[in-house]
Image (cartoon, rainbow, N blue to C red; front, side, top):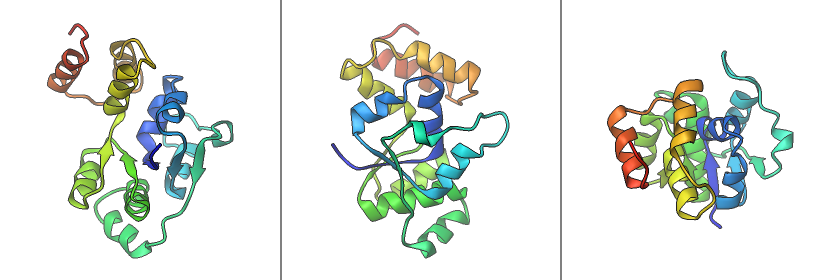
Length: 162
């Protein structure tokens, strides 16, 4: 299994869906930087705090290159900045959904995937039967933003009805 670093939103989304074990089954361990841990433990309203001690496969590790973190923090939130830096340092796949963070990762040559990509892989590997109910819950209950066009294309690509 490959090394994976995660930003806040994928951990939050899979925990909300009660599918956090998918991350362990697909990736083994998931590494998060301290700022992401802080965002999960002390979230902004309306999110609920997450007890990371009940997710034993999540490891908190700080990035070393604080100059790079500061560079990314000029245009991204600190969690994204630390996650991108840590993924670069470890040569890891990055779990991230935010558009600006994905653009920064792409510019740095860091491979990334978001919640939709993880769900698609989980379905391909027969870990889940359907993606639509999970995506619908994210959209309606967690206010997870997915453009309507992407939503329809994603469902079709995964063999589900629009």
